[in-house]
Image 1 (cartoon, rainbow, N blue to C red):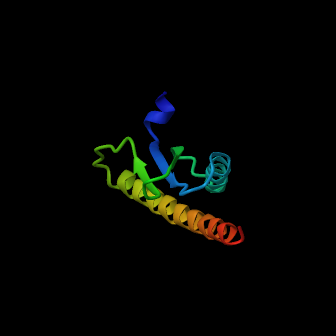
Image 2 (image 1 turned 60 degrees about the vertical axis):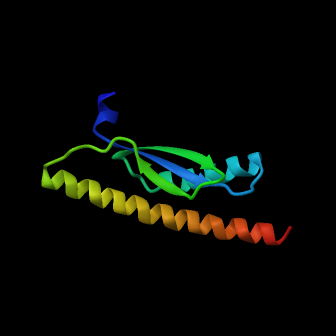
Length: 103
């Protein structure tokens, strides 16, 4: 429990649109695998599919921090997370649209 206490806990809500349950599960798993391959060892991640909401990231354990170095480290990590998440979901969304157009 101590190791989680010192890490950011992020929840990734993935918009699955009108995908079937099996396709949605596969889509979320692919996004998760791509993201986890980025080696963010300083955070705990949860991926949740949503239908009627935007894809977004929420931090479950914001902390009151006064140490400038820790603040800077968290901000750098969050920026990298956000940039990588946007790239990954954009790539998968283009694939999802392409697949829907061929049906």
